[in-house]
Image (cartoon, rainbow, N blue to C red):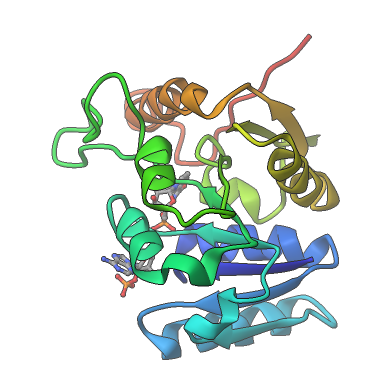
Length: 214
Ligand SMILES: NC(=O)c1ccc[n+]([C@@H]2O[C@H](COP(=O)([O-])OP(=O)(O)OC[C@H]3O[C@@H](n4cnc5c(N)ncnc54)[C@H](OP(=O)(O)O)[C@@H]3O)[C@@H](O)[C@H]2O)c1
């Protein structure tokens, strides 16, 4: 599949690595074209035969999946700006809308989620799926923790869209788990906040993972 990633930071690096190892085509789109081009060069240098290039906004138009690797609310604003250019793509919201000044709360009000706010801005035919907000960027580079595949917790209202994201995760060597409808993003974002807030106190060094074990 064609996976366009908007943003060229830490999560873009991790998710692009997983998508490329799954054999997908990756396009990187960033407000700095140079930053996207540098990341694409780096990934091609690391992964033999990797089909990854920097693109401009046109790179979303035939994408199967568009990942919003941006802070919140920038991801919501980008979805509103792109409008119908995103129709036909599954939008993957990976954000943790954390108040980074306190690491103590979310910036979205109770009773909703960033994912639902983004879905409210999305054009018809561009379903939003919450995924990857509980996987830390450093762990995505290998897709594993302690020799086990990362769990990718997924929430969304459209089964086909969730299956597409599940295929993206499993082709990259991870374990997708369907958490239910998009409103479950509220709990996933709360879990993301919890995971972030314990990094320092528990000395986790941003390399921990959330796993559901039977
Ligand atoms: N890091 C993690 O372990 C982790 C884990 C799970 C989820 N997430 C979520 O993933 C998202 C990306 O995180 P990250 O760690 O990859 O962040 P990052 O390394 O800071 O990268 C963010 C990217 O977004 C761009 N950006 C920032 N503000 C923007 C704006 N207003 N408009 C357009 N582009 C903008 C940045 O460009 P510039 O360089 O020009 O600023 C950069 O390319 C966040 O929502 C975060 O909550 C992160």
